[in-house]
Amino acid sequence: MKAPILYISIPCYNEEEALAKTIDHLLVVMNNLINSELISKESRLLFIDDGSKDRTWEVIKSKHQRERMVLGLKLSINSGHQKALLSGLMFSRKFADCVISMDADLQDDIWVVKDFVVKYLEGFEVVYGVRKSRDKDTWFKRVSAESFYKLMLKLGVPVIFNHADYRLLSSRVLNHLNEFKETNLFLRGIIPLIGFRSCTIEYDRKERIAGESKYPLKKMLAFAWDGITSFSNKPIRLVTTVGFISLGISAAVGLYALFSKLADHTVSGWTSIMISLWFIGSIQLLALGVIGEYISKIYSEVKRRPLYIVEEYLTESTEFKLDIEPTLIRELRK
Image 1 (tube, rainbow, N blue to C red):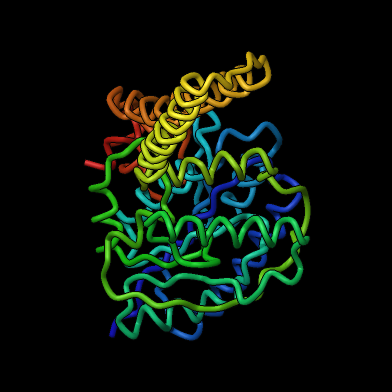
Image 2: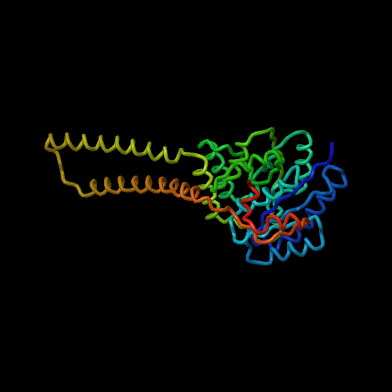
């Protein structure tokens, strides 16, 4: 069997401190795989600068000038991790037999790449990298992360437990991924929907080699909520359920008030009135908030704006660059 062309797609946002080491480490991995004849010499590393404010793009350009294996895409603005990742996947599918996505901080065990490729050669078209444990995480992060996966599964979102975005996808899977046109991206939920033969590889997640995490609690919560609302209508059904429960409670309170009136046991109480008003008001605001979230998703989808725009390319093919550079990257997805 001919050795496959492998692309590794790495989104980067303000990774100046870690990026040079990341590239050097990945070059060692890629050259080892090429020397072992597991992957083709045409395999490449693709780094996507997601609108970084530091010297991330300068580091990528410098490495590209010295190493033909290093390619780069520079997005015009910060589009977000999922969209940056998608831009790399859609670019890579034009040239690669399979693509591995990972983060730029080397927390994902890069030596597992070989295991991914071996599984691909065995016929698996999707290989998920799954964390063995979260022993190195803080108690809060471990509990919140595991609760997130359990909640997603209960809501019917087809996520892989303890899997982030470290995975291998075949070109066939990527071509089908191209058919998913939604603006609200949650790739961890979309990939399992595509199907095809898949497996998991367990690995130990490491500490960042440099820099700080680009996913603080606020972003993690926003990401989790996007995943839930993009894949499940259960929250909005929950609002309906709460509405019926509230209606039942109101009916019971109404009957109690009526019987109290007939029995002449009524006592005017400010507290009970205020509690009822606050309860009903909070239910209404909660319902409006959840409905509003879904309406905002619809609003984003119907506008059909491009997910990202590539400002600059670092590739080997001048012809390819001239062909697509004046257009939006969305054209790659047609």
